[in-house]
Length: 86
Image 1 (cartoon, rainbow, N blue to C red):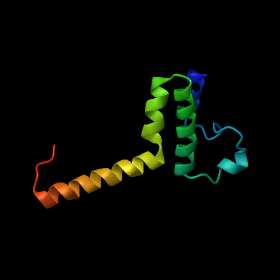
Image 2: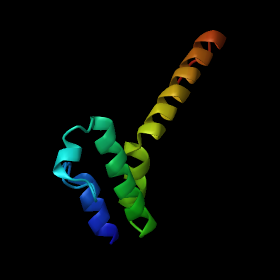
Image 3: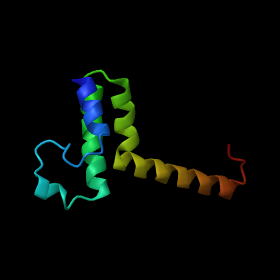
Image 4: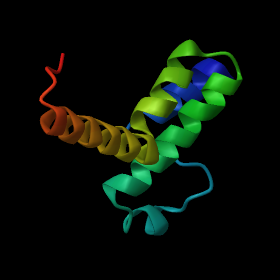
């Protein structure tokens, strides 16, 4: 099951999301596909796939946004304090 869900999440095939008809996915955005893939990778991770666990976090739109916000806040703090980053 872990391997199947990892492969399902990585196909990029619009028919991959379970329970979604062809007419429904035609209106999907890239964000919708990312969310569906993230869910598939999450399930793969729950079944023991290390790759599934890692990709569930990496592709998750919320995690991406959070990471971007943290990076931006750190850059601003470094600029404010004059600290050297990296």
